[in-house]
Length: 116
Image (cartoon, rainbow, N blue to C red; front, side):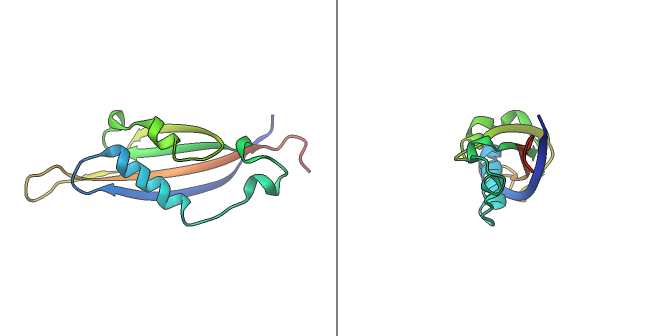
């Protein structure tokens, strides 16, 4: 196999009051995706389902992230979600739950063996 990473997109999302790490990460993924329309698979004569998509999510509490919900955002491809410590929890002056900021890096790869 000749797996080649061809694209990386970045996004940021937040959960202002609920301290919902999954919602913040979902917004970050959509931030990265909704700014472009890339026909990457077709460019190489591949099907969209052949895309190997890796989503790295940085939040302060990676264990609170529902990776299945994040993966379900993608309509095609083979999606792997990796939760990492990162992002930012911003304390609120009123003593409420902190604002959660999530960062994502989405990488798209294809098996290009035999592709000229």
